[in-house]
Image (cartoon, rainbow, N blue to C red; front, side, top):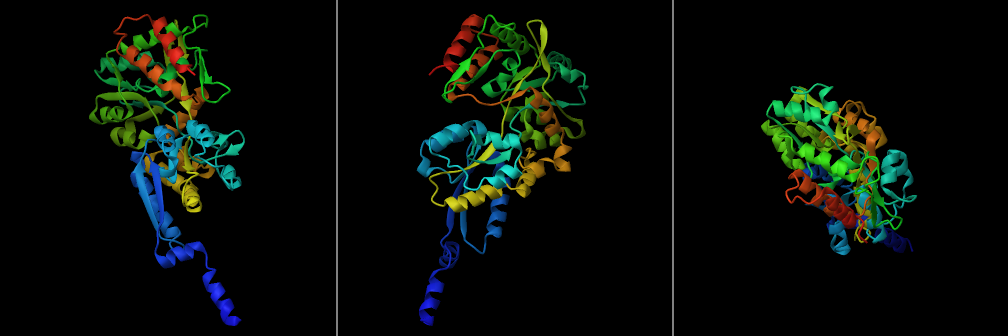
Length: 399
């Protein structure tokens, strides 16, 4: 009987110990931003050290844009990553499609994360993902060697100073995410319908105090400045590094590169005002968070959840801020002296007074990008602004 009991004890060891004994690795695939590879590899190494006595791991990193993660994952859930980073506006669709399960133990996540980040990671009252950053917004970077604090209050003044210095001011009009800045504080609206999938949009309004054509004309006026440069985010950084760009609109993910390029001359502020319909309108912004999700179809759900928790814990959110300049969603990390002293984070917090949580359906992006491309190129077709706005609204509101 004693021998039998001893044999039972031997065979009752936990699964992780069996994995260690047999040498069979726990295979996990992680999707993350290309710029995060070095950071993630460091986090993977510390994770493997932490759990070295429980299992062997084979963690594979694959670059995947956070903004397109939903589409890539839903194309084949079973073949998708076990753990993935994504923008918070995708959480409802991922949950509805069965790509995310509710977090099994959410109390600690709710206690540790900023309330806005918890809201961004939830559908209704149910938490579906782990908050990673609370900084997915944009603001103004500027070179203090050229601009005063008074200069950066107005976009027209910024463009005038840059033009006089024969330099450039960069913004990405190929992305509808940034173009929202011109419409957001005008009384013109865009958002999700009750179905959570389709949009409503009034950007073509002719009865609002600021009409859609007023915004379009303001964009044409901005694009006509010799200092204006319509470039994607990576080319904005390249322009800063080459010395041709002295101001631009971007986010905290570029803070490290900006500091390296401008040093003590680095300035950051809320977005400026711009002239529209004869008045100064404060530029708006979308806001949001980056999240870490666990694939509901993962073959290693418990270890995938542990890795997701590890990526988003306080220590690694501090590390993310140090290496990538990104603002933590963790309360303690966000309140740390080093984060609170960041110019970029301070500018983002100031801009948050004029921001809206990004909640738009998939039909929003392409019609807005097509419209803003026309504005950036000076309306080369000559099509009436109202007709172009009507076409934009039709595409955004399509069911």
